[in-house]
Amino acid sequence: MKRGRAAFAGVALALLSACGPGMTPGSDITLAIVNAHVWTGNPAQPWASGIAVSGEKISKVGSSAEIAKMLQGAPNARVIDAKGGMVTPGFIDSHVHFISGGFRLSSVQLRDARTPAEFISLIKAYAATVPAGAWITGGDWNHQNWGGELPRRDWIDSVTPHNPVWVSRLDGHMALANSAALTAAGVTASTADVDGGTIVRDAAGNPTVVCKDNAEDIVDRVEPSPPAELNDRALDAAMHYVAERGVTSVHNMGTFGDLAIFERAHRDGRLVTRIYAVTPISEWERLRDTVSARGKGDEWLRIGGIKGFVDGSLGSHTAAMFAPFSDSPRDSGFFVNTLDDLYRWTRGADGAGLQVIVHAIGDRAINSQLDIFERVERENGARDRRFRIEHAQHLLPADIPRFSQLGVIASMQPYHAIDDGRWAETVIGPTRAKTTYAFRSLLDAKAKLAFGSDWFVAPPTPLEGIYAAVTRRTLDDTHPAGWVPEQKISVEEALRAYTIDAAYASFDEGIKGSLERGKLADIVLIDRDITRVPPETIRDAKILMTVVGGRIVFENR
Ligand SMILES: [Zn+2]
Image (cartoon, rainbow, N blue to C red; front, side):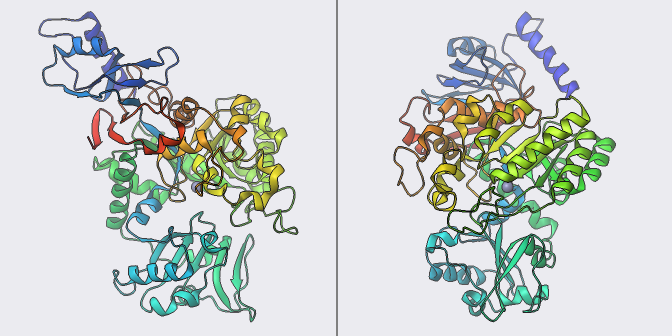
């Protein structure tokens, strides 16, 4: 990075001093966009109408007239007339499961199954397209679509005689196996449940079988890992899919296996998405050793973050709450790791200079992890550590100010709010709903918000996320004025959470996340200025072009 920057400073100097021998002002411009509403994310120059790129970096943000003047010396620059469209910094998705998402692009799609019959016929149709013996995975089903009955293996056994099936609920906290997958895993009626997980059984005790949370390991551990070639294909599919949505960087919540796939792509020059590759907290020592051997990477592929889990999800009733669920009075969820383990991992990883990122959804889970962060900060001393809580869905009102007090980033997924908002109130009741997906309260309390999608769990589409944060209109359109409307935020606040503040969440705000001279040329062109349209139409806006490092990686004009 340092060397790249120094080289760029030389270029900028040449631009400014304009005209050494053979050097015309602007002659190094490779790409320019004019006649645009440029939202920069830079408070010193919030709006402009033109932008120029030289190689990988932004060389000028200014008026269209200024850019046009510079272009006179650059006959070979590609010049785009935005015709009043909007330019923003490339979107940063702060929470994805990128390889899983890539696999799902080419695997069975159950998200839209509205009935058990549809669920079965989708699996049957897909099974006909794969070779015998291949595992059928992915899925993203949602039993709430048909009233909440959990799927059973006897629904699908007869349509999948030749393939093990292991398909997940869309939040990843439950999965359905067919009999072939169960046989492969050695699961029988006598198989016991595991800590932090359940196997669903019929009245006779036979697995039916949906495994919840930690019980998923029983099948996961026998699922063969796909060959490298298929992993590479999944990554390429994922990168192009998000580029179509204006995403130029992702924070991947994944594994060392994912990291190896990213490293191979980086080596081969195939990366078109910048990746912050977060690895599991339980293996923090391995990451510490990797960082000390090789550093934290470059602007394409960065490491240094580790992620752990406190609890599960609301939809599976596995979020850890202080009070029971409103629709299940004896159940208040559970922790999937002990607080003692979480404390030891947090303290060790933080002491090694790693960024600690923790999934916490229920109010009790969030409260417990904030306590751990507070204690570790006291014990390890002051530093720029940027702890993160992923999801941060259901907050105790008293915990809201603690995010800014402790410098903890709330990494949230606004699309979940309009998805869960259809049914969440039956699970948590009206009082807890007031501080659920509490974007407004967190911003008012000066917390930093980093937005993302949680893809494969939700679509990796920032314009949908912005729409969700700004309107809070649930997917079923039963809340036209917004679900818990007092938690809405503005378009510009949502944009910040998808750009400069998401860059901050990976320590990258110095090189990307806003449109400023010298920063990486990660840029999106949208067909309309989404700050000036009725909020309910934001999701109709189209991405016209996505630029990463000065290179056009998606274009639809
Ligand atoms: Zn996730």
